[in-house]
Image (tube, rainbow, N blue to C red; front, side, top):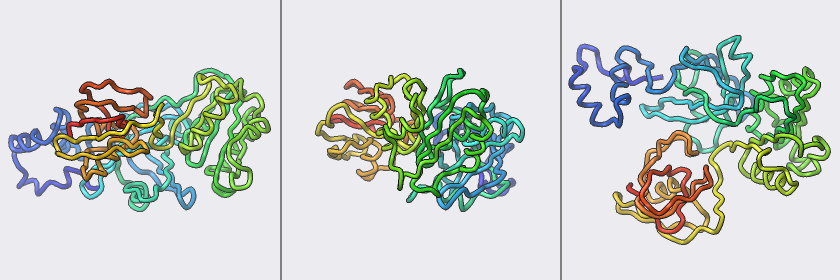
Length: 371
């Protein structure tokens, strides 16, 4: 993979340090960013705040999902099963960042120093299919430290795990890292059909190894989607368990609503969306206009709520963005006035000026942005 240092001309023709300083300081927002190209003269794989990581292998799981086996540099501290990392790559001189759950367990990390990211190819995506076609053993990418709070409590309370499709990845990591063999765990894993369950043999091996682990592979095509009948059949004591949900947004919204109707306390329901958090306003979105003041553009807010990032792109603008799910903070901008709804926190802003994240902010009425 091409790095900034490899893009430089012949060493004898490189600009001097003063010239390089003046060039970079004008286009970078912070001291660490400004120093990055200087450090890369000595350490070509250096990236501010990221860990150079070697690709060990790339393995296809099925037609749509593949796993990348990575060996991070010594700066990587470890992870808690259920967490994710930011993966950064360069494509045609442009840096892209995406966030993926760690799908491998702690034993693999402790014994081999490797971890795995299991990735579904996104139709129309710029990166997921390109990674599958491009990454080879020996390539260098960059990852962040592990982050996220979709992790199990350090207690042996009984658990119910609800997974849909690629949402199995954090649960794969959790089951591969079990510290309490006697802990009662039931996994209900929904897939489109009987052939679409990822890591099938591995999951069933955990069930065989741990008597208190129950793995139920559900073929939604023939058995339907998550419902109270499945709960009563496979986990009748669900109301006494902590419940963890990961999968497509519609599945999570449906599961949460059903569990709440069955009087499961919100404190027992934990979830992680596999993608952007869906927009749910407490009341219908007020009609209004979003104004992009510096660009001298306006757009009418649609009836179906959309993020300000989508609205900006619909208006022909190209604001900086990365993860599109409120994690990387690349799309922060100044709201000059108006109210926005934060889909990640579920909170409404006040009407004054403040910094917001475009990808998780939905306009409520008239909003003015400094873009």
